[in-house]
Image (cartoon, rainbow, N blue to C red; front, top):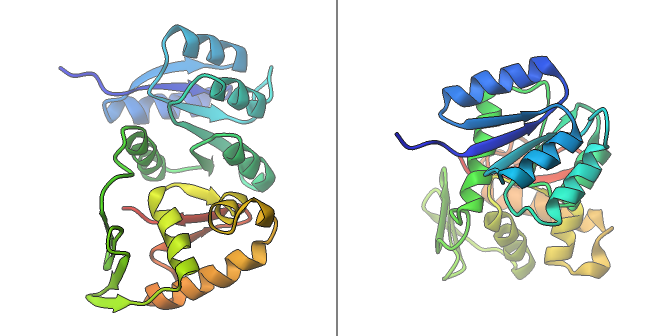
Length: 229
């Protein structure tokens, strides 16, 4: 029987580790557990995992420091766990190499969807396809053609560049800073009003109800995510 991906859980709260162990093993994942940052980094070196779930609030080392240390050599996805209200922590983690975050408390379905997306990107499944589809949205990246519900939609060059950046990482949360640097360049990393204006314009063109978006999702105080499932 083929073994599933190996997930390293670095989390000091035993009830959460127990919940993760039960949820993930039921889906066929292999699990390694660490209750400190030091132990987690040691286990990662002994047997590099396919994905890391990392709590930011560890008893011995700050989770951000563990993230930075792992990112010096580990290329596999890292999904951070954070308490609600820690927006600055989430942004910092994403800017320093985390692939995604899940806010406590979280449900099994949400967690599994985030893990599938991260593993798919790691395997190369998030990039390379010339046509992106989700719901009634279809984007032909080779032809630069955008269609919603069978109708072609005209986007300005900057609108298309923003959409293409989101498609490249579909399903992942992208910080305001990342999108601004990717679309407008390094000199515009703090110009968040640009992003709000262009995102609002994209939603008007792509969403059936821009006030309740289906595709272009806001991650409050963090950034945006393009739906992929």
